[in-house]
Image (tube, rainbow, N blue to C red; front, side, top):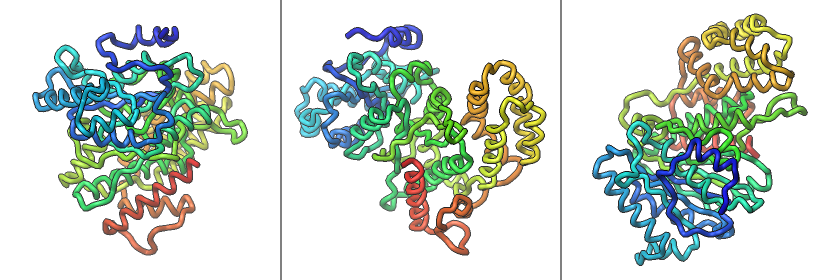
Length: 458
């Protein structure tokens, strides 16, 4: 199959001939689910069965691509586990495996492929080895497998080997992309919070932290208000290429990947005189990431669970909602400044909002950056786009951290939630109660947060 010129150009510049997919080729590949896997032999049956139980409507144009990976210096325990994974997947792909599980997968009609980034001569270099590199290997390899003759969207879907998905997962993502003509999205998620395992309080705490931050960004009117979770993100192949593909970060690869897509896809909303965020949220189905602790990334879910269980930090704290009020006022000021406002005028108004906002912007070289933007923007529309690009998701997070460190200390997690609910006119979950409640009430808070977020996306 002949690849489009834009794909060939991308692969020549950013791809690698070292890694390629092993699969039984078939026509009409429109959707590819890329799953990095390191020492996940025991988890692969779970994610595979979860995917195989989907409605088979899109099995004939969907491929599940595993990237079995490790670094060149990985220990024997990792490489041996990965070898088992490769053997199992190859047995399913070539229909040579006779065990009951493999036969279930073969009969399901789910199409599977694998990239070997683990065996001798194929392992990832130590300096790059990590989840970002593994996702990149898989997503780059996927570009060679799509059927570009089809008019359907060509969707790159990220998932992780320790996840499960709902039975409408594939259909809902494909439908949403094609019916709404979107280019990048995150799928709704929910960690499993049932049972009494010691990881459950940890993951409740961490998911509340994630959702609270995004809800605060929603309140502030930020175009970067979306969940940055690697197992939930997706995009079409055109925009994957436009942002020069996945990065090689060992952690936070999802944050930076989605931010680049967001900057590219943010669009003006003339009716509301503002900008629409570029990352769509698919809330008609749910990804269920594992609540386990993990050594696989230096920070993120696994490490936060480890930290909670280890009692190394007071996890029951959140940013004061006052931070988001400052952010909201700043975004209103900056977004309405227009071409008539110079840096000094904006900084003076920012100082009126809060002195630490002024200090932050000064430390971010706002004056010189804004003067450069004013000089080089050829139209009001270009200037407005540069505003949302300059004050991006990373600067937004840095401002919140600056306010935490310099202006307002963090407060109890559930007190913060009650305050934010009140500010956003949501019914409170508690009356005249403060501090950290028991685990059942914590679950209630998390369930409420999930419901609020879904309503914001519908």
